[in-house]
Image 1 (cartoon, rainbow, N blue to C red):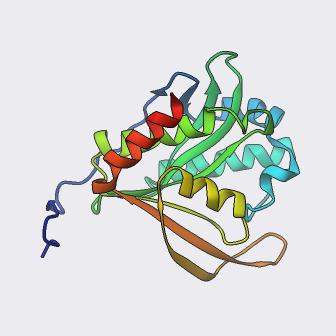
Image 2: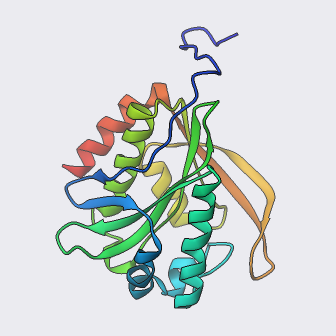
Image 3: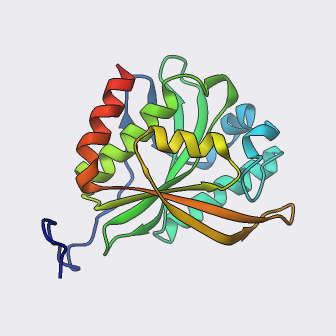
Length: 207
């Protein structure tokens, strides 16, 4: 039984996920391909970018493997990865994806997001999240979007809270990182009833 005041959905009404280009003022999210590998490697081999990622990317070959893994997840129906393109310059400046897609239950995760250092304090990351959330809630009709980060990554935790997500809890001993450290992972969510508030706040920030 649905909670009082909540809409109901039939399980047969599965989400339809398809490749799409998402256009903003500052950034264009286009479907990730192997052709993006060199551009991503040109800006994305900074060790600081991968400090909190379970498997770091340090070389062109590792970036190619990173892209290939994302495309394999897409082929298996679990992910929809994007390259982030700065519209003013046409440069590839980062990467993100929809992941852990649950079509039946109308939920997905926004993650695997990184923006190269030169663009980290611009509007690109905020607009990227805005475009992904708007498409998730308004086109895909998600009822839940998840985000997660390493419990030690204070900057990421603060950034997720700033976009309006709600912290839900910590998965302890969630992952073993490449260094052997056992990672605890903090989960956040935005649900469909919260989207109008989050949308208004993000649009205010972008203005």
